[in-house]
Image 1 (tube, one colour):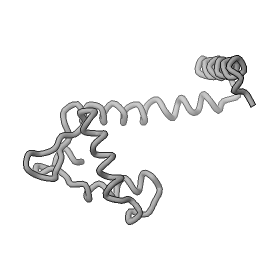
Image 2 (cartoon, one colour; image 1 turned 90 degrees about the horizontal axis):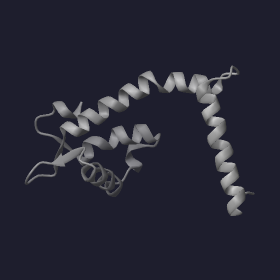
Image 3 (cartoon, one colour; image 1 turned 30 degrees about the vertical axis):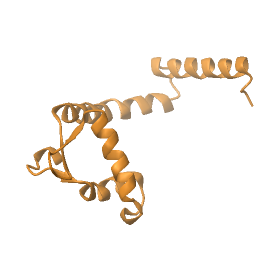
Image 4 (tube, helix red, strand yellow; image 1 turned 135 degrees about the vertical axis):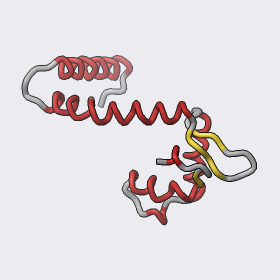
Length: 114
């Protein structure tokens, strides 16, 4: 959506969307929180600031990353979650058991187990 805005987008343009994703009231998202989020996106090369303005635009890398994450969310996540909650043995279920066992072993070995 923001890739198609020729003038870019501002900090305040994102406040409503990020509040919705976080499940909070848009008025509770501060300018500082938005600045922090934008700075992190900029540092990862997903957005860049338009010169001599307080506007940003999505980079090609950012668009590719968003498309990849959307595809993973739509195609893999529902199936993966279904496999994890299934009573039938699956490869993903076996992998889950293996990493849980490894974490339990590590916490016992380091003395962090409760």
